[in-house]
Image (cartoon, rainbow, N blue to C red; front, top):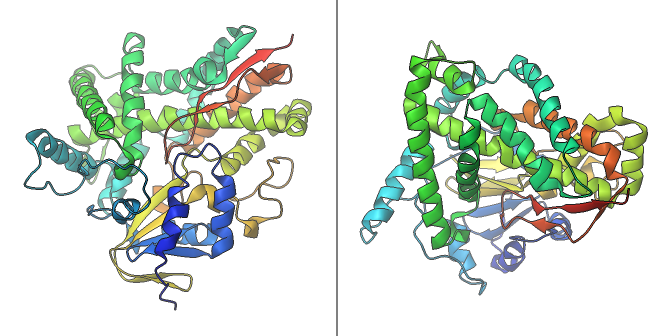
Length: 430
């Protein structure tokens, strides 16, 4: 076993990854350095597929109560601006304002009900209950509706359009909103809250005080909205997901109202933000690789393979963090209890060990493994739905993509963890 040397000089390279339009050349440099880099005593950065998969599947890693992030203290040495606002997921300092204290309490309560932040057995209970309301059968039943929405959206496109605003965003928004039973009139408001809350998965030290205020207001509004909707579904259940969550139960009991709210919030954000990124990224990859676009037009039955390759090539979720719950090892590297493992999923997906030419977008070759939906017990619950939505969207867009060109460079969202396009504006030559 190896006690890895602390190399603080690697911090600048790590800082360079945040906010890049194209992080993949930097990821390649990380993989070339060594399998694991330790820029801080309590931080290990993994960029190879085998190591990232090992961390995600190991019970020795999980979620721990948040302390001051080693990333924050490291960042101060880079000269880059970083917010000084307290991390609301930590214990509240005595000098915190009443608003900060309230936010910290609310965040702690939310994390205690969020399956993404929990370890077994709490995670197991929440995931099992939530999965009963989002079964493969329910996804299959949605397919005709997804087809209809995609056909309508693509049919309404003019000679100039924005793939994101006109298709990639409204398709999953309408699907997940209908699944949750959110009335059409409320959807723009709910989507605004969701987009504001999506910054919450970025590292806390990168979130500005202004972002925090916006996120806090969005969180409160969203919770008030769902808190009013749940009693209605309890009295008058429908065939929507909120009704299913209200009434789902097993030998471990039922979901609490707060758990239902957090689960619905999670499903809404994950159910449209990541799918929007997947659809947009798939279209951009095809436009940048005309031979692959031609191959898909010649064989549209390959669309599922195209989606899978797009997931590998440019994943919507770029990195994940876990804490070592005990002294453990990853490969030959010793990781002490309490240390953080930062996994660069975008780098791991392009690991040369998985096959030749990992930087190429090529869905005609045999499929490559990837970690874009996670791995282990936290594997994405909505993966079948996201895959289906992306495949259907591409199938409907395919006839016009060969005649389309970008009218301006793509615009990326200012996120770190959640990578996706803000705009992808095209015009057709026909």
